[in-house]
Image (tube, rainbow over all chains, first blue to last red):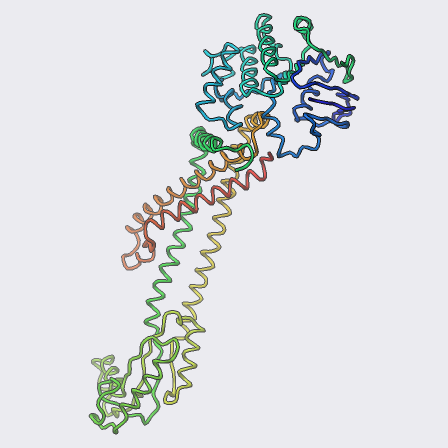
Length: 219
Length: 320
């Protein structure tokens, strides 16, 4: 369970990114975070991921006060979270296979086990044939699918996705969402930040709307 | 093992480090060459210092202290203490007295070997030195020169304080009226060895600092070049150890390569120097260590320098 209590986030220039956000996401839930650009969707995901700290408020993840987790324990927490970044964050000097395998390497998974899981993850996103390509030789949509494979390969407890279908054509976007649903059905908490209203309507999942950093429709 | 660092992580760290060495071959080689030249220069000074020390030990045997025997002690003509009494007019019992005196000298701490030179023996030695000009000794009484003990010191006493302590003890012996020794030479040689010791240490420290600086900067450049990859690894949950160990291994591997290269440089240098240095002086650059010790020592020194350089860099530039 992820709980936000009166969370505020202001950037250094004083611009508020989140204002008094109180929110609960149950374990195994599928939630869309939606709202216009600059509404605070990415900030919310970054705070859950631990790459940004709130200015004020409290966050509990699985009962633990997130702000009191010592920095040395943060990597272990991140190994349980799969994050599909808006800018993909792929390593351009490594192949698609190596990029996806990196997720498992940091977890200490052995090479042969890692190989099986990486190929399986690449098959989910239909990219087995691109395994030995470098990211820069792929299209934006393909790079996004590599990022999806890298997040899913470690079978995370929580999946965070920041605009995961922004670069995909409609058919592939639907396919990715079906994949997220399948992952969710296996117990992973899925939180997707998107402003793709059509997708939200199609999946009919719980939706949390942000506008100028404030929660509009909390459920 | 740190949290999040399994045996597979170690395998990945090693393969990553080797991959990085391959990818940054030129930088890694430059780094290794820096280690190699630093170690080679330091080793040259160390070799010279050790060889001089070894020579000093043999020179110590030539550091003579001469203790002159008081007038009135009669001895045999051969210059050997204990010569049967009366053979050269010595009173009965004189040889025993000399023998006793010799034993006292021998028992003095710091004395390694003692040779007795009788009055006649001293004159014979002088005649031999003045060969061709023996005329100057005509009419000189055979007992004009005093009998003496030529003393060779224990090598550990061949230093100003050591020699002085032996000389003081000899002067205190009844039957010895004067003691001579090469005080100035001992002082000079001892100062020179002290200088060499400090110089070798300073050179070693300076080269170690320079090597650490260069290795840490090489690693810093690698860290900078891979900052995006490091950021991604952090996001994927890599522990600090997982991120740092490949850089540490990379630095150590560069150091070991440098150690091996330094061995090559030293042997090439020895070969080249052998063609230009006079033969009688070549001992100064001969390797005094067993080959396995020298090569093992150089590679271990490279490993430590490389590891330390990486740690310095990682501590300063990689906060994970």
